Amino acid sequence: MIGWKVTEFGKIEKTKHQELLDGLDSVKVKLTRALITEDDIAHICGEDKNVQLPIIPVRHAVGQITETAQPHDFISKGSRVVISSIEPCGECPACETGHPENCYNFGIAGKNKEGFLKDFAVTNVSNVFTLPASVKDADAVYVEHVALALSIIDKLNVQKSSHVAIIGGSVFASILGQILIYYQAVPIIIDDKEANLRAVKKSGIYYTVSASNKPEKEISALSGGRLASSVVYLTRSGISTDLAYKIASHNAPIVFAGYSYPNLKIPMNIAMSKQNNTSCVNNGYGNYLAAINLLANKAIDLSVYSLPVTKMQDIEAEVGKMVDDFENKKPVQNILVNLLD
Image (cartoon, rainbow, N blue to C red):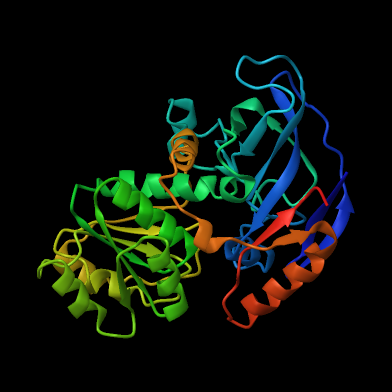
């Protein structure tokens, strides 16, 4: 079995590994597609000093069950599945008191446990979720993005017709915006790159604002002078965090969200004066089934973000290009890897 491992920050190398069933509840998955994102590259490059080397990177993957340690009612050999990238530790006070969603020390694929840039994976059956035939692999790799968006919406307690500003124009911003529309809220996506704003518009987001063109004034006009009733700041947006607080109304909740997070500074003077409640969301634990249902019901259109498929033989070269872009502070484009070829 083969995989790609980070042995020193900034580089990956091909490696051999074993994947053996290790308990009655373990299952073996033949991985078919993996999504490599800027967040993965940030971990590969060592931005987060908590990343433990050596490690196999990559957080998002789908595959097919090839082996189970024992029969299960809801899953069997041949089932298409998405694998959860996060796993509660089971030992912290939150886990021991029945609240694994608040785990102090989640195991995170590609950060402190092996990721999915490999051909096979063994995991606990509780970490796999079956995929309906209507959800293509190219969309299924975004299941945790959808789950993360649902976690954000839960944190914001979004109301019908409320204006939610999203700072950052990535594919995740589009996913979050489309789900907000599904829940009858009004997303406003802000970015400093016109190409990103054009893409989110094509995906069905009506309101977009350039971060370079007096966004506070535009948000005020769109919201009838009330500013945003809640704000989501995407941690890799590259936009000043000051903007999140300038466009938020008084007492508005502000969520910082993302899988990786460069060192960010909060303008506490503005937050205090407006009494903004600031919180953070970095995973979609507990929302995988709801996320799959949203994709199955076509509530989210990802066609604008369709990616060319990278072959296994090109992984090292493609990741090398992504690392170069990241280190040179250039935009890093997601890639979809075919782990069958």
